[in-house]
Image (cartoon, rainbow over all chains, first blue to last red; front, side, top):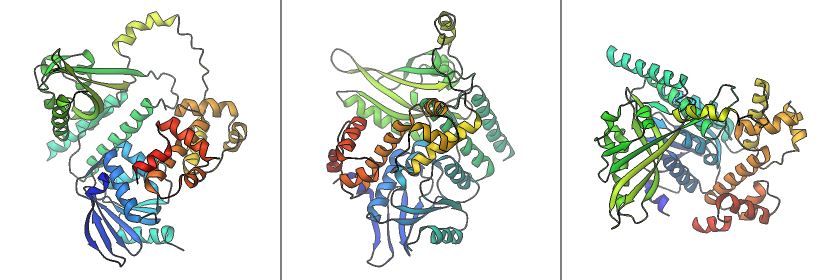
Length: 142
Length: 311
């Protein structure tokens, strides 16, 4: 499919570590948590958001996962994308933790979490360890 | 350094003034800085986006003096994208006089990021036989403000089928009354005795309805009770819920539920391997036939066609 053509495998192994990237983000699976790191200065519009979700869903292969979303390099995301990511974009997600870098991306994530309807447990953190702890408590298989 | 900071704060004041006038379509240009001023600029831009969307969907919490007006920006260009004619609203939105705009290339008033988009789209469009399209552009208004809008672009052709002129149109919603509406106001006054049922909502009613919308979005698979019971559960009455929901979200509770169920079902068709029957059941549709019919009505094609496109 055309939309998946941007997928570029960096490593691929049968073990828990597996990663790939597209134009907007790098995806890395570590200990059952999918780490998604947005690339530097990326601007997210609806087309980009759809691609990010499609690539994630294809990678997850219909398995629900906790997501650690590192948005520290993100600079712009429009309303259409925010709405899409919060609703249609929340499929196959057990819980999501945003890793932010104050003040800009903390402001973006606070706004997103406050205004957009969240269908899964969602919170933002400035420390990765706390974000992972949240995912462990809210999004791991029991 | 201090001057730069002062300029950024001036931009914020300008945006706030435009917001106070009801012009929520302006945005502040962002930089790659990571400081409190930049965070404030980003938040203000996002606030404006949310308010703008409310205007577009008629989802305004009722404020009695609100007037929703439409501003239309029309720009006629030659085939190279040089502006030849504009309407009054264009000068108002871009905060520039017609002398500053006419004779210049449209790209002079686009943000850098969108200059490339414009060049690419224009080149493609001129070559096409059916030369009309809609896409996003970001215009630069005077003094650090920008305006993002969906624009319709048409290539006007002459008798021999060659591109002769380019027409760009876009609309914005504003609270300020346009000149046309001011002129027509007197004429309308006698015929405008509103017969529309207007519901007065208390802040608690608004909160309850907003919470109900959130509940629906997070529980799409669940059926809702009838309107009377639903109103009781959220602590309001049937009348307020019925007309209040419509006032806030522009649709009825049950139509909203169906629309959101279909939206989720569409995502599931694309993103999952569930059968259509499973997707119908997971989204609260009683039968496959009902699901298929509702889906086709909403999107113009049945769910099995979408599934085929995505396999």
